[in-house]
Amino acid sequence: MKEITDFSELEALMLPPGCHFSADAKTVINCWENTEVLACPGSGKTTVLIAKLKLISDQLPFADGRGVCVLSHTNVAVNELKSKLGKSAEKLLSYPNFVGTIQTFVDQYITFPYLRQKVQAPIQLVNNDDFAEYLYHYISRFYGKLKWTLDKQFENVKSSQFQTVEDFIKNLYITEAGDLKQVGVHRNIAGASTKTAQNFKEAVERVHIENGVIRYSDIYQYTEESLNEYGDALRKVLSSRFAFVFVDEYQDCSELQRSILDEVFLDSRTVFQRIGDCDQAIYSGDFSEQTPWQVQTPHLSIADSNRYGQEIADVLTPLRTAQEPIHSAKGTCGIKPVVLVYDGTSKNQVIPAFIQKITENGLEKSNGIYKAVGMYQNVSGLKISDYWAEFKKRSSTKEMSHYSDYIHSIQSSLHNGDLYLAEHCTRKLLCRSFHFVGKKDVNGNDYRIGSIKTYLENNCGETYKNAILHLADISSLTYQNVQSQIQALILSILGQAEFDTLPRFFMESVEDSSESPVNNIYTCDEAQFPIIFDTVYGVKGETHDATLYLETEKSKGTDIKRALDYIDKISKGKQISDKTGLYDQSRKCAYVGFSRPKKLLCLAIQGKTYEKSGHYFSNWDVVDLRSQ
Image 1 (cartoon, rainbow, N blue to C red):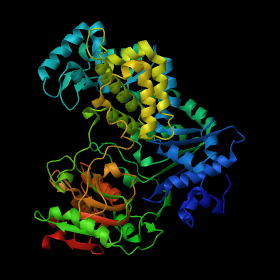
Image 2 (image 1 turned 135 degrees about the horizontal axis):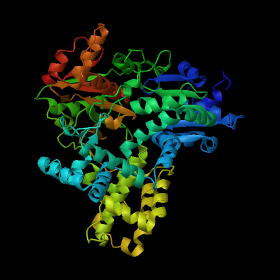
Image 3 (image 1 turned 180 degrees about the horizontal axis):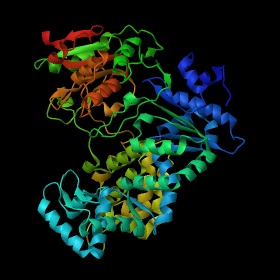
Image 4 (image 1 turned 90 degrees about the vertical axis):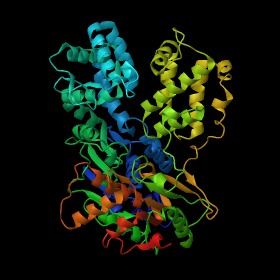
């Protein structure tokens, strides 16, 4: 690829009128070697990547017949690619190119070709619940003594945690040493030398190999086996297929995903570029013991942001791993970040004070986005609902009660690139639909997730599989587009007559569900605009007009206190003891939350946190609600 000096055509295509790529961005666009790119929030890294792809598409097809591979975690990058490149995207979305999720790429090019050599039946990917049911049924048929042992063990630990023996089996695993253990329990259920452990391991393997039933969580085991056995051949084949590989949002790759991609693309003749921000690697589950991505030296950097003013950029810099300065392309905007200091009697003034600051700065508008976010929503200490009692934790799929709830869940799974979760929820919806129309299994019972799979395989196998695969091809993942395909699938299975008997209360919210359900929206007479409450994890990747970050607490310490302690220690060249990962996670959550707004950043903290903050808030606008 040739270096370009005139960016005017790309800027006209990719950027708003009058905007230009920064010098850093131009360097990244012109780089065609292996590298990592560290991009700050609001730097437009996906736009930079699409600019590179535009240059590549203009050169396709390459003389050597190779193509380009673009990997992300969701379908968002694919949709943005299509919208910004127009006809040029058609080249990138056809052979020999690949544009899709990391999971799909690994399955298609590494894992499934290997599994097809080993497995003696059609491969069925299932979740842990389905696999536990299948495994217990298999053990019951072929391992009578093992079944008796597991039944006895289940009776010994039976509690609210395990309602069925399948629930118990779902939490069993074989260690690397060969011992049979229960998740979260230190002692072994059976040692490696016992028949119990050996037969359990053998049963799992036979279910995989003889029956083709494999848990999603087992896939990477076979991916590693494939790399160990055919690593050199895979590198050769993939490098002959792809001249360039780009990974967007690289910080969201698991340690295992990174190792797989490095294994097949580093030290090959493929140009391998990883783009992301290691400080935005936040996860809503328990803190992982995995090693997070740390950008290597040397690397390229995009440290110019188009989202916020220098006032917010200066707040973000100390929160970065290496405190690399962020420069705002907008310069100073004249709006200082605001810290709202409260105590027990003035906490209820936090939201009104945020609304007042929005109004004072002339930021209110009908289509504006104003959000209040916090790190913790379900803890015994200070949490999001302490600022607004009506805040509710987002519903889980287990609480779905309407047809539209299932469609939203499928839609969300597809947005996140999780086709297997979308398929699992589709089966849940079918179970619910079968219940309402009176379809029962051979024993006269309602269909469950596992039993309906057998029904689908026996009665509409290809139709169902093709419908699920077509979900991944939806170009615009709106509610209506997803609902249309799911409804067509249900109609093909039930028929129009039975579909029409589905009760109105179950179907009633379909027509009004073009958008996600309205949840956690704060309104009041004093404001002409709503405030949306959410977690930091829920707003990652978003841009707001104004953001209020709410201090929250876990394990006898708050996220803001830990973030400030982290900054203080690092600034003094000291190390901080962080065995639980709470300090680093708090810093990253603050970094992500603080970088969402274009104009106004507000932080709500307790008086005791503020009093111990030293000079950190010297350049902030301090509003002491305690005096009010």
